[in-house]
Length: 165
Image (cartoon, rainbow, N blue to C red):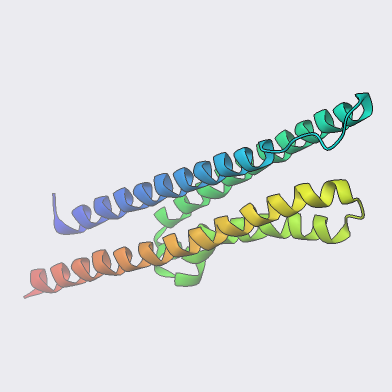
């Protein structure tokens, strides 16, 4: 196997590794969000309070499931770095890591801003906190990826120079 093929294989392994890390971070945040929303107790006694508590749990589980789906979809955008045009362009590469999560964060922010119900504001605030964490973490992951990419790209350039001489 020649050096260019080896570098390409290493780059593909690196992208796969960062996708797995991204997905695991998303799953950890999902678990933390689920634990956070489930650690609530009913605020009153009686049938009506129990019904509202049950509806709150169902609503929270729905948001939790949406959060899990959004994290899974957002993690797949890392695979766009398999395309060299995206991988070589730092802004496009950042968008593949954090662009989709930033757009997903915009939805809870707009919903929280438009919402007039106190009941949903509490749910949306928790969702917003965890939604903001994910793009921040993916940006850090992107910075680590770029550092690794520059190292692998530098090795490929050095190998190409050695072959020419």
